[in-house]
Image 1: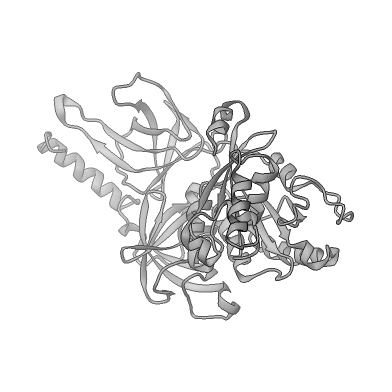
Image 2 (image 1 turned 135 degrees about the horizontal axis):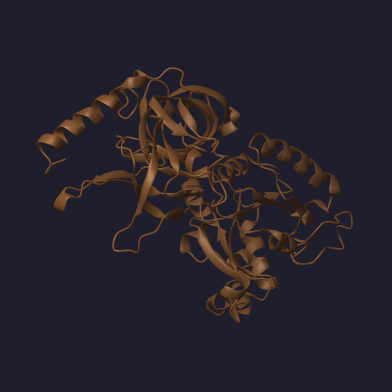
Length: 459
């Protein structure tokens, strides 16, 4: 399936959409319905599955079109993130059917990271489940703002409007705390094909669009080229052959653009310089670099900065600043809990910094019961204290500078987004102890200048 779809991708465009929701809420059935109702299945596939069900004495389910893994067939749950090609009259889609079971949240996070929009399925009979909230938080963590909430199994409640409205009210209030505003709530019956590609006469009280129409109204996200300039410094390279004394500051531009002659500032050191050249390896010279490019720069001024600093334009009022304390939303997937009085490693952009949990402000866990730690699959709004100041942005100002991973030992155990920069409050080390900050940085510049003078072939 999908070979014939790929041929038309250039004309129609392509969009990645994740389908998620609590286990047994019907997301795989919804995807199967979309595939069948838009004739996106290989010829004979639908009938073959129906014949197989009949032969084995099973009631046909549209989810069987997707759940191909043996374990999934036996247990009735989606384990991995399946990628399904499907096409409407508007464009081609890659739908990521993400696992809904609590044990497979890591798989869901991995699958959803490729999506720009989401369909979140909630069972009208069961209502908003704990995992429905977790999945909402995951979408927030990934910055997926185009969200359609499909309230499924309306046939199981006799297409009762009040059931739909109650779920809409409850879940909207929760998503509002995450700054996620759904594009629409749609009452559906995936099994019966109601409001999927055609409006259902059983629900005359619903006058909105079908699921397919709303998907077709979504937009691929624009690039960050029109945003402020920012580049986390990945490394600084020194050359010493044939009199080449360049110091090249390298990294990938996460937003904006930069040109030769522009004044730049490095954070957290706040050192300033001007772009001298845009460097390239066996490539034509250029004087401009834009979002997404892995770039290297030489500067007019000789300054000393290190990996982990963020280069911004001095002339722009960029929403990036220095902090050693942040408020963040975190989801914890580690085998060991996120606890107080323990040091972890936080990775944000190219920076690596030790971090401690200082406060749990709100909590979403099993039964919403408050603990003094975040256990596996728990989510929470927390305050994190960093060992030294780093450059950060809130996630909503710049996803690349506001999304992080927390490492416990050698395991990536949690992820989160920066909600608020709480400033330089209480670093474990003094400000000048961070390499590259004012004070120590000046000494290091003088030291390197002295070393280069006496050992020109080494520095």
